[in-house]
Image (tube, rainbow, N blue to C red; front, side, top):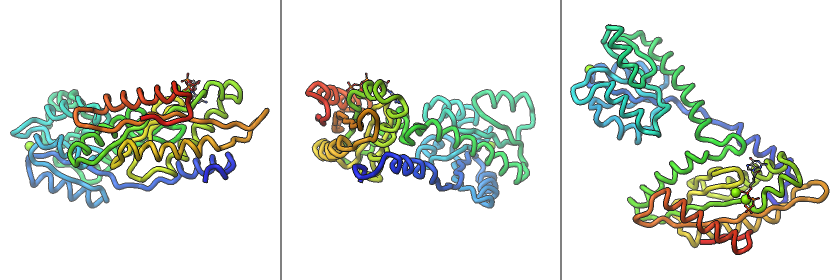
Length: 312
Ligand code: GH3
Ligand code: MG
Ligand code: MG
Ligand code: MG
């Protein structure tokens, strides 16, 4: 399709893609050893259309965070298995949860103890009994800011694709899943050929347009279950679940062919670009970093063999 679209139409499509966002209700994990307290907290938040889950054993909190993917955590301070501050400290050690808001909800009224608990990486301290609208307002304010921040970290602002860090995290998750279910998984690194020359000849804004249009084409062409990242300047990374290296190379080569046929209107003459790609398939004993290295090595081979091609 892209071959027949004018670049201006393409960019309009890019804009409309980034404008459509659907609101997901906030998700809150409630960690409290008292079932009565967590039920009360959950009911209050559910009344404000906030989705909740509770764990009464704090040692299960991390596993629930991975599974439930909350926007925010409400934490009790005193629990028999592990205290709130201890749990907060562990949560903060995981790179995945560095930005996760943690709010204490506790009967502790001693300001010194409250501040001490906060110093382990929490954002707020609410004392029981809390007014429902106070709880709801605190959760909403924290959650909206955390989401905005996360969206900025997860997505690349030029293309709307996943950021370098996030695509590697998705690859990490995909490796774990592939190991468990035995399905094939491929990782692809893709790099636009002679891109420096594009910038030098046509200017940086034209370079940006090429990057955006390739991003859009990848989004249009790949499956919903595939993940697309902007790995670096003119480098992209693809996580393709349920796909072996051979099939991945086939799809990427098709995309390569179509992309190389696009003619961008420009002076002194229209511009066409190409990319090279390297494909690597997941196998036991590999992890995200090793797989990325293999794809990078394959990309290097494709470049060396003359560019505008895909290598495994
Ligand atoms: P090769 O075929 O070996 O990949 O050659 P190349 O010129 O593409 O390789 P190199 O990685 O040396 O150059 C990439 C260039 O991409 C350098 C940089 O100026 C440009 N670039 C990186 N990010 C952006 C961006 O966001 N926008 C634009 N317009 N250019 C970018
Ligand atoms: Mg308690
Ligand atoms: Mg490069
Ligand atoms: Mg390049």
